[in-house]
Length: 402
Image (cartoon, rainbow, N blue to C red):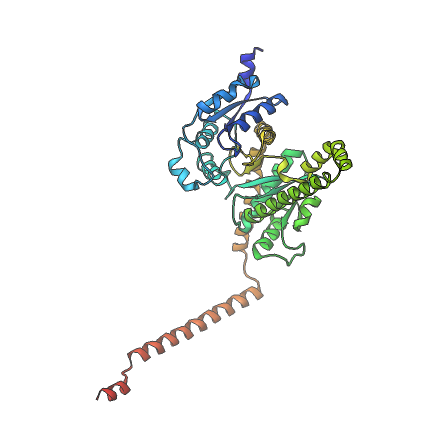
């Protein structure tokens, strides 16, 4: 096979080169790192050609890659609605368009999360049966890493959406690790069945009833995430994002304390030099952001969100995740699994509608109707009295006037 044929056979990844906080330089360096580590892909870099061309020319290993000029960029301050209306010439829009058209098989962007989510949903569409997408995070645990979702795509989620997140997380973890039956837990304020709000309890009941072939653990608490109690932790995006940012901050705090501790004396500095490789590994183990690349689950194509502040090594990690997932059937598997579960839920709902009421349910239903009628009668009487009082002549006022 010739080099030209080999390059033609490589999978193509669309890269929003203007999205990272550290700028296009970090994106190009990250791509070079990924290629040098053995990643087999051709990158389509979307962004300002005048900025990207000099950077790309310095990396011989990226000679087979291409630049697609995009005159505009999406800033972190841009609202998703504004980007949907006016962002057709941005690097993010054009990169997503390349995936939609089939020119690329996956997208990586470190840009505005809300805009990326809105544009991806608008152009790539959702898997049938999924209401909303969810963002994943790979979380360090005592046994390896777990998957946490949602970590920022949705401020809130109802019970059915939490069930969908659970199914998607299960399929995603299986694709990542090869585990045949990963365990799934719902993040709650306690592990007891009565803890938490109605949405969580309803989701747990639905998972036990309708997804009995899932290894559903039940409720897990915040400390269970790092303990590795379950393989997949499911929550809404608000709670997940707070947990993620808290863990990242704690990791940096411990890292800062460690650096201060080893700078105290000459002997400690010598010890720190000897221990540096181990300390670096420790930092990477405790920081959830050390494995960069949050996947948008629920879309019909692979979209990987790189951390905005990721360095070149982090961007290389996101690109590797995109390539691994693009060559996997997990989206088709996810669609089939979601469809199967949603059919079970619909069948159960139809069966419930056709089932006659029990004696206690009939009594409760009649009682509710009677109470409603009594309330309506009281309200009608009160309104009638109020109307009568308004229309009744005021004799006292007449006498005063006289």
